[in-house]
Amino acid sequence: MSLLVRAAGLVKEFRRAKRVPGRMSVLRTFLSREYDVIRAVDDVSFDIHEGELVGYLGPNGAGKSTTIKMLTGILTPTEGTVDVAGNDPSRRRKANALNIGVVFGQRSQLWWDLPLRESFRAIRDLYGVPAAEGDKRQHELVELLDMQEFLDAPVRQLSLGQRMRGDLAAAMIYQPRLLFLDEPTVGLDVVAKHRIREFVAHANQARGTTVVLTTHDLEDVERLCRRIVLIDHGRVLYDGALSELMSRYAPYRDLVVTLASPHDVTVEGAEQVARDGPVVTLRFRSDQVKAPAIIAATTAAAEVVDLAVVEPRLEDVVSRIYTQRGLPA
Ligand SMILES: Nc1ncnc2c1ncn2[C@@H]1O[C@H](COP(=O)(O)OP(=O)(O)OP(=O)(O)O)[C@@H](O)[C@H]1O
Image (cartoon, rainbow, N blue to C red; front, side, top):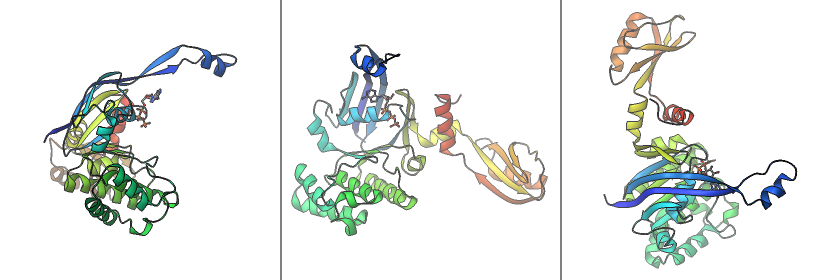
C-alpha cells in the first residue's frame, strides 16, 4: 500500500486573549494585548496508507478537528509538516481539494436552497468531472444511498438523515482518494446510522477510498475501523490495531450466570466481580483460560439456569483511557 498521508511533528498553537478579571472585564479583555497560548496539537505524527480506514478518536477538546483542519488545508501548522498525496495542504489548498472529500455531521456543505440534483451538478462542474463519468457515478450513489425520492427537494427541506446521505454523495461524486468524515452519524436514528456505516464500508472496500473517521460513536469505530489513532491534549496516546488495543487493555471476558438461588460463586481461574440477586458476573483472563472450562467449572459448582459470555466493550476501555488521561498500566 502506498503512503497517502504523512503528518510529521505537527503542532498547532492558538492565541487566546487573556481574560482580565474585575469590573468591565469584557471590555478590558478586549482592549488588553495579553494572550494565552493554547497548544491544541502537540507533536502529532502518523502515516496513513492508501486504502486504510482510520478512526481518529479523542475526548472533547483533544485536538481532532484542529488536526483534520491542517490535513485539509484550512489551518497552517505552527510547526511540523503535512503531506497529503504529494501536496502540502495549506500551501496547495486547491490541488489538495481535488484529492479529498470532507463531510461534517454537524453542518452541511450543500447549498441550502438548491435541490440535491443541482448541488451535484455544481460540484461535478467545479471538479471538472466528465459528463458521462459523472452521470454514472451519480446514478450509482443515488442507488447506493437510496436518494431517488428526495433528489429534487431543496436541501433545507431534507431530514437530517437524508441531508447526511446528500453530503456523503456530494463528497464522493468526484471520487476523492481520501475522505474525511467528522461525526457522520451524529443525531441519526439506528437505521440511518447503519446505512451510513454500510456506505462508508462499501466506499472503502469496493472503491478503495481511504477514510479518516472522527467520531464519538464507538459503534462507528467497532463497525468500521481496524486501526485507531487516539489523542488527548494534542498528543497521540495510541496508534495501532483496534483488536490490539482490546487484547492489550481488556484481555478478559465476563461469564454472567443466573443461579437458581442467590449466592456467591467461587471458581478457579475466575473472579466474581459483581452479584445482583441471583445474577453473578465472573471475570476471567481470556488469554489464559478458555470460556468452556470456566462454564464447566461454574455449572459444576452451582445450579445455573442461564448464562452468557460477554466481551469487554470498547466504550469501557476508551472511557478508562479518557479518565486516566493515558493508557491503563
Ligand atoms: N480557533 C481557535 N482559537 C483558540 N482555541 C482553539 C481554536 N480552535 C480550537 N481551539 C482549542 O484547541 C483545543 C482543541 O480543539 P479541537 O476543536 O481540535 O478539539 P476536538 O478534539 O475536535 O474536540 P471535539 O470532540 O469537542 O470536537 C481546544 O482546547 C479548543 O478550545
